[in-house]
Length: 339
Image 1 (cartoon, rainbow, N blue to C red):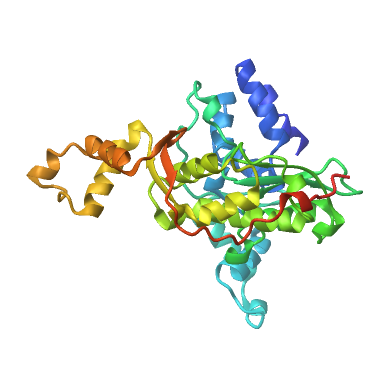
Image 2: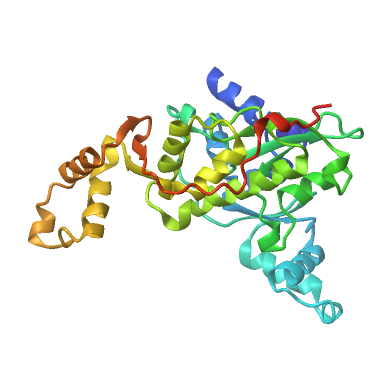
């Protein structure tokens, strides 16, 4: 792992790229590091640009924890992918199953598990857009440690073990810490992908509560409001309107976006206008009127008619719908140990 963490120092890159990679590796979760160990054997990495592009897309790789050879890979596939019952597990040819699976998916074995590339990587980082990099796929991340591991490890949320029934971020991190309970750990740091959410440690009574809301908020962001157009922009604008700095309140806002009328900013108004015109039955798509309709102008008229106010990500206002509080708590009554 140590050699992996200093991989970027051997690569050609700019000073800014090296600084980014140093921070990226410092905040990389245990699972991400395990994935990267295999990913660098699958994807060619010749310079800092390649490595940044790879670390932004580690979620495009699957990782089978502790599947370190054909036999343990077969056991993992049988248990977690094929959901084989305990009754039939003794009769499965695990070594053969693992070998065939490995031949089909062409992944790599590492000391910590099996890694294979699920999706083709895109050229996300082009050498000029470093400020747009987010560190791949997370909504909340926490750093936890204990007496045996005082330097701590990072955990990315949301964690999907409850649905996949496979070891994910939390189980892998707890294993690295040598414990099975968060109550035996201390919170060292916490952050949210949305910069307005700050001082998470002051908002919760326990690590478990922080993880619960972090997971739920992550699920909401991943689901994008069940396919709601402009979901993230809508959410960010609602948080801006409310002056939201708390994770639990952000989670409630994500569940109550119907309480906020919203339109995206200028460069997305044409698409917004198309969706709005279709919803309102103004014109039919792929017709002569539809092809010659000014959707941007229609969107601007809608913004004016509804009295939406400008914000960072578009235009918004509260519409008076009842806001249902489910997760928000009194911020003055919450504090978590940082010892």
